[in-house]
Structures are given as C-alpha cells and as structure tokens.
Image 1 (cartoon, rainbow, N blue to C red):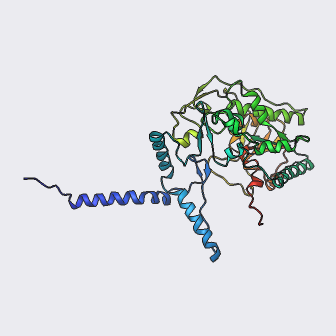
Image 2 (tube, rainbow, N blue to C red; image 1 turned 90 degrees about the vertical axis):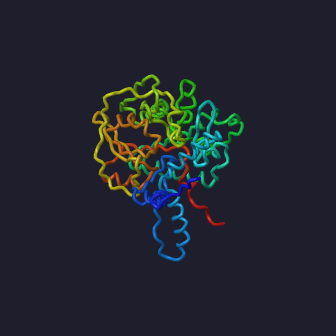
Length: 391
C-alpha cells in the first residue's frame, strides 16, 4: 500500500511567506536604502527622483521619469546585472547587453557608452555651427581669465581607443574615421589654441615604451597620467618661467592589481564582474613624503553636485608658489598627487568649467591659473548635449 505524502498547512504558510519575501524584497530594499546616485556597474549617473507635476501637461513627463527612476533604483539591480553578465559569459561567451564593454584583442577591453565607438568611426561629427560655437566658448573663457590676470589650460584625457585603436578589433584601423577631437585640431591647424595641451600626441608617441592605459579600465595608468602631468606642467613652466616645479617622481616595478592594491581592479572589470579573471600587473608611484595637505573647503558654490566617489576638495603645499582652480573628472584621480605638490593652494572641482564658480571663488582668493581636464568623450558636451533647434 502506497503512502501519499501531503504538505501540511505550516509548510504551505512558510512557502507563501518565502514567495512574498522574494516578491517584496527588491522594492523594500529600494525604499529602505539610501538613494544611490551613481552606478558602479554601468559607470553612469542614475535617474534622479522626479518632482511631482504641477500641471496636467507635465503628467506625461512625470510618468516617464518615474518609470526610468524605478528601473534605475530597483532593489538589487546591480546584483541582477552582474548575474546576467556572468551567465551570458558562461553559456554564450558573450558580454551581457547591459555592460557597455567591448572585448578587444590581446586581453584589452573598451568602454562603449556615450557613442565613443561611433566617434572613433567618424559617425558623430560636430556641425560647423557646433564647432564654431565650441571654439568661441573656449576663446571667451581664455579672454575673460586673461583680463583678470589668470592663465588658462585645457586638456582632454584621451579615450583609450584613441591611443590603442589596434586593440579594438581586427579591422579597427580600416574603419577609423575622423573623431570630433581630430576634427577640432584640423580646424585650428593654422592657428593652434595656445591654451590647449594635446595629450593625444604625447601619449601616442610614448606608448611604444610601456602600456599607458589599463587593459581592464577606461583610464590611463600611473605612467600615462604622469606623462600627461609632465606635458601640462611643461606648458605651465612656459607661462611662469621664474617659478620652479616638482615634476620628478619615481615608480615601482609592475605589481598585481590596479594602483598597486591587490584585489582592486578596473571599472570595466567591475562592470563585467570579472575582477579576478582580468587582473593585470602595473607599476605604482613610489612612496614619498608629500608636501600637499588637505585644506578647508569653505566655498559655497553654485551647481556643485556632490556624488559619492566624485569629491571636490582643496589642497596646498606651503613650499609652492602658485594657486589654481582645477575643473576635473576621474582622469585626474591618478595624477592628482603630482598636481597638488606644485600649488600653494589648489581647489579641485569635479565638474566641467563653470564661469560662475570661478567668480564665486574669486571672492576668497584669486587663482594664478585655471586648468580644465576632461575625458575626450565629454569635451564637446556643451554643444552636443543641447537640444536641436526646431526646423
């Protein structure tokens, strides 16, 4: 005689509770957790909480923004993305569609968001109007600062594919077009911008010696950042010929892990959740006794958004002579110690150039120089992110 096993009411209740827990845990996490503003998985700013509509016309926009907000802040979202990417890699040898990463040649990986590959192929050129508008804005900055007795330097941290196109794909060099940065250089060929430091040229010439970018990161490594620092300070030394600067730093031999921290890897590796698999060796800055110290950051600045991992701060070295304001992004993380050793006072603002911020800072002190460093793909944001004019 067969015995039929049946689940009792206790088991059913437990099963129901588990089901409800799985169902409601993500929204509960979203509600109870601090609101995130940055995705380390996708390396982008998350959609902010929408403001309630005040008119009927705003309802459509409000619901659209709410939908995007819920998608970006859904509980355990990064974990789900990581898991999806792992399974795609394991079963299909493909990178998940949510990872803006291209697996290149010889272990190199490239960031693909923000239309960087389209720019590489010359498919997103600046219009003549946009180029003229951008150049006019740069000239306006430089002229205003010069009138205040302040020098100006602009430098673009090259996108990795601009320096290492040969590792993108087998036919990358065949499909290479004119990028927007190259379009701008060609436009000013007869009259180069006196404040522009062309880091593309510097890094392309030096890349034969040793890798200047991490294979598993979007950024230059410590050697690449050091060459960029030297090029910028060569121009600063020309502007201030009577001043002296500390530009000689020593480096270690290759050590495991980015920035010399074992277990810490590049942003592309983190997006793919393949930190251990994509570990690489690289040199690090040898320890030295820094002169620069953190200074109080007491400036009430307009439109300065504080995002975790994107700090704005002030530093200073009493042995230095010049003062500066530096508009920057993540490409200044590595060379920042070099910069800080050379300024009596330097204010770092994690944002693109803001005229109002300069005027606000000048109520406290007048910088000798303003430096703007931004990654290549964001260099022309001021003209390309504007809405199109109605036809």
